[in-house]
Length: 72
Image (tube, rainbow, N blue to C red; front, top):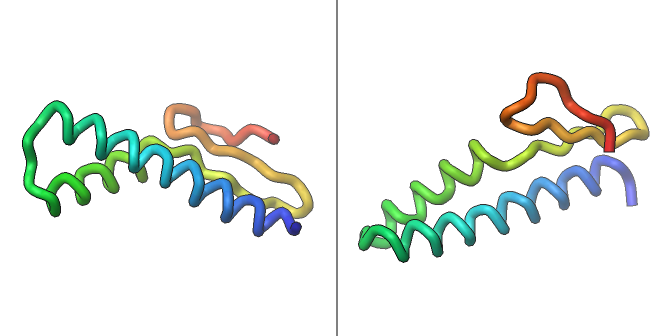
């Protein structure tokens, strides 16, 4: 599997896990309608999820609370 494919898969998996966690957590705390709950969870998950970057043959991860990416 190429590094770009790994980065894409990791981005999708981490976003999906955070989306489900935010959706369940917010859904338990606040009784929101379906669409605002989904949109709010998607926005929060996209802001909080780390980004995996393929540079050459190496995989890097950029955390939202750090400035510089780290090598995986």
